[in-house]
Length: 386
Image 1 (cartoon, helix red, strand yellow):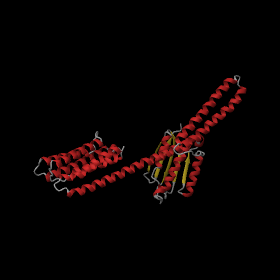
Image 2 (tube, rainbow, N blue to C red):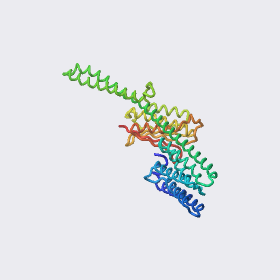
Image 3 (tube, rainbow, N blue to C red):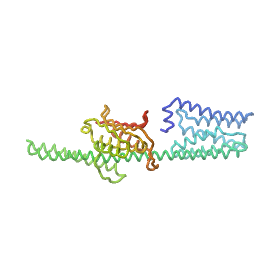
Image 4 (tube, helix red, strand yellow):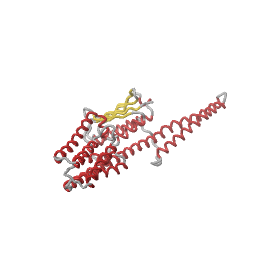
């Protein structure tokens, strides 16, 4: 969904008012032009006026009519009118401002939101159609340069915004890919550790139970199945990790961070930045699953990094971990401050929040972030414990 469509869905009344205002402005331009220039109405004037009304109505976003259909209809109407007047050798006194503005509105929307192939066809039709509107006038030179410049400016700016949006999507995809690769590493570290323990215990118990059980054959078969299931789980997990990492190549494993590493992280941050007040619910270390602890550590790490970048003069940071009905709540809050003086490359593209959200959702949880009324910023993540 485009930002404009999202805004219209969140604010239906404002969207209706904006639609009415745009319709009134465009139709007002066409009507004013018709009144001023067609004091003695003729058939060519009627054709131009009708064309302007239809194109202006097509430029307004109407529920149930897609942008592509409206743009295609407007392009067909404006080109039909222009070719009819040119081929019948009937130039008239006409400005075409309202119709040209409507075509520019449609051109911008098509270049921003339409699929690539559709934009490659409709975009030139709308742009050239806007440039061709002055040809209907008896003295097109007065308006040709104006409409040509406006078309180039609107088209170029819309294409630039489209490229930026595409780059943004690629960057977000790269962030999500990096988070999945990190999850693949943690999957290996955690699952391999536990499943390997199961296999080792099953093998040890197998040889112990064989000597004590009255039916050694039955006990041996049971433990053999446990051992085989553990081996198959390890093999399946390794194949999954290989698929997740195939684009990045092999990577070494490292111990998975937990609450102890989180405490060390808070101490290191306090030594170089604002003091950190860390609050961890009593007994949480013993009952917190390792994968949840690793996710909490990663979220806190990213949040502290953002504080160092965007709230360099903050005087205090509060980190709290506690259990709530939905699971584990991780809350990081600061009291605000001015951003650190970093270059654009060092500051990054603002994808840390996307990475934290991706990690929380991958665990089946949620993450919210935003400013506080007192100033500063708060990040709250809820991770299920089951």
